[in-house]
Image (cartoon, rainbow, N blue to C red; front, side):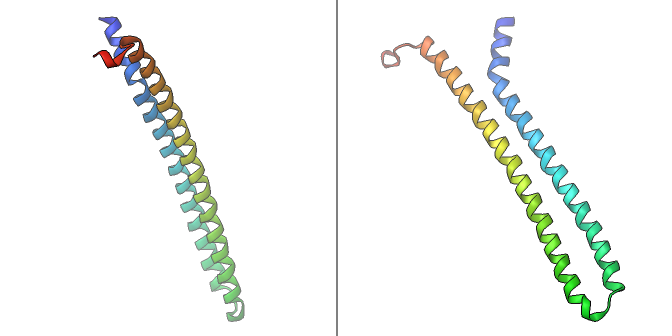
Length: 117
């Protein structure tokens, strides 16, 4: 019975590994988004304070600087998220390739000449 159980565990290992990769990627992306949102809210508060205390001539420059800062922050976060997702994709691809090779060897040993089935 333990051989059967270990066989099932070995068969499910790729699924468990992929689940773990997905969990880690989700945690990483969530942390990046949370930090970005916090940074954006903080920058928004600073911008409101700067606008309230500024003269009308400087308002346009303040707003453009603010928009550029926000754009850079969102772009940086998006790039980090894409990197995290690319890493997860690579890890999942590797898991799938290894699983395929394992199962291919198993079935080749089990059925050396599939044309005779």
